[in-house]
Image (cartoon, rainbow, N blue to C red):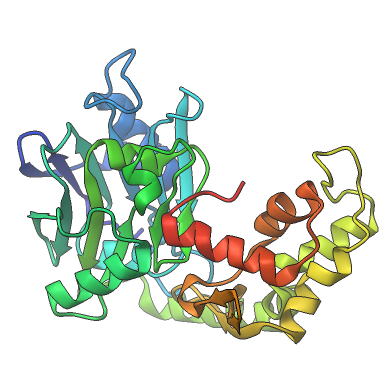
Length: 348
């Protein structure tokens, strides 16, 4: 396993940061990701904590494989008591932020307390500091992303942030990275907002090293060959998650009009193949992933402008904004997806 052994505890109320090392026993029981995040959360959160109060604890954790050159392994789990459900909520994201967080020297970040004014965490090669973010508060995600990169002076930093939705404690607010990747579900963006934590900015040069480099390279090569030869993987890369809509509709399982129907008459107009033929600008990817399932769309029409920085709609967005509401306009749905990413909202 490629672990740093390091967890940063950030008390936003006190403005203090403490670096701690976890024992091997903990990792063997809770080897990263959701398991480690939940463990760290339960170690600190008091019973009855208000999800939007200072007693709630927000954890961001990566897995033992995050940062290694393996398709699908650049994942970060965020975990806290959910303001949407009241239960423990966790949510995963992809992109490049998880791998960069590991390279910056952290297996997990544990946020407690509540800052008096907006702040962001700057973590770089084992050094961490809280910096003022009042000038970023109220900014949409693309603007905050640009401003942070200019402020740090490095266009390659990775940023997990909230938009105005999280700042205003919308209970389905998401944590966004790369502007268009989301820790959706469970409203953890609102938890960040309640703590006045605008963003987490990471940059590192210490990528994890496998214990057996030669064997690892052979394994990665074989996995890449298998993935590239798999018709399902090739199809998924070509159409992304949006391609699932046509399959679901064909078998009568496409959620439609609030689950009252299983097919949608305009499904073909908004599915992955139509997206690929019309408004797709390019296929995007996450760290070290050969699949490239992420969509980037671009539309410039009177009254309908979609900036490609906000990515493109996933299956869930096309379903919950589209078929569930009886909407069959692909460009309009893509605009709704872009707006959700702009303000930092979950689309389900």
